[in-house]
Length: 80
Image (cartoon, rainbow, N blue to C red; front, side):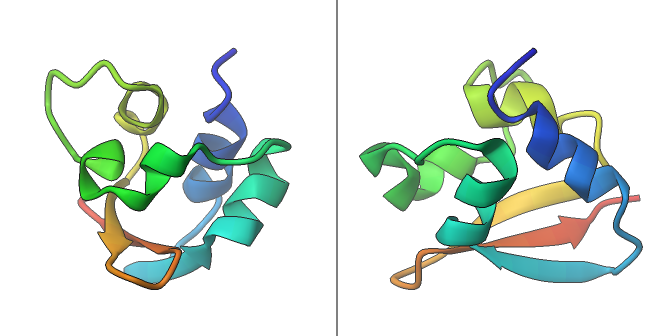
C-alpha cells in the first residue's frame, strides 16, 4: 500500500466537481508529514506515465491534483 492510498480512497468518496484540502488535512488523511518537495507543483503533477508517489495512487481516482501556489493547499478537480 502506498503512503497516498488513504488520500486516493478519500477522493473516491467525494462527489464534488472540485474541492481543496490543506496540507495539514492531507497529512491527517495519510497519517504522515508531506515532504518539502510537496511545495512544488511537480510533486502534484498529473503526468499520464508518472511514477511519483502521489500520481501512482491518484491515477485511478476521478480527480486531478493541482498545487495552489503559496497556500499549502491542493485543489482536486474532477476529470470524469
